[in-house]
Structure formats: C-alpha cells, structure tokens
Length: 118
Image (cartoon, rainbow, N blue to C red):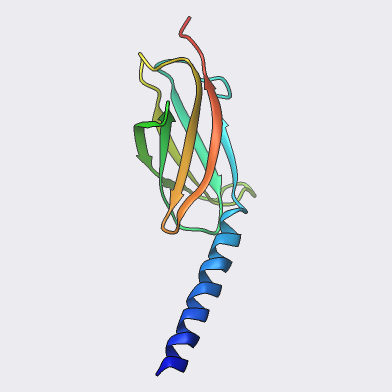
C-alpha cells in the first residue's frame, strides 16, 4: 500500500513538474503596445496549455478580467486564443500587469504601461 502511494505521488509530482515546464512556453502579444485609460487591450496567446482567463492588475488589485476565445486558423496562420480587457477610464497611469491564467495556475505575467488619455 505504501509502495503504491509513493508511486502515485511520484507520478503526480513528475506530471505537475512537466506541466509547469510547459507553462513557460507561451508566446503572446498585447495590442495596443501603449494602452491609454479607457482603451480595450487585446491579449493573444499561443500555448499548448488550456487557458481560463486574463486579468488586468493595477497596484496589486485585479481591476478587470476576460475569458479567452478561439481565433481559428486562417491563411496559413495557426489557431490561437485571445481575450479583450478593458482599461478603466479612471485607471491609474503607470505600470500594470496582465496575468494569463490556465487550469494549472499562472501561465505568464505581462508587464505593461498605462498612459494618460489625451
């Protein structure tokens, strides 16, 4: 019994470690590169990991969240996932983070700069 428990624990640990290693291999882009207060931000991610949502974090607080949708393959480009986040019109200007989360936790945290609306 102890032997089976040890074996299952080892398999779970190796599976978790393998999944964590895959989390690092996410490619992404953020549009626009210089978002302003009130702008929508599109986050496009290409990863083998299942995605849950993207969050905009300002001063350590989540201010908005969006689920990912699939953008199908077209004209030689492969399928990818995208989410559209709204920067609040009165958001504090300066540094912020876009956090991409999957079923296994945080996949990537993307630092961005929010600019003042002109």
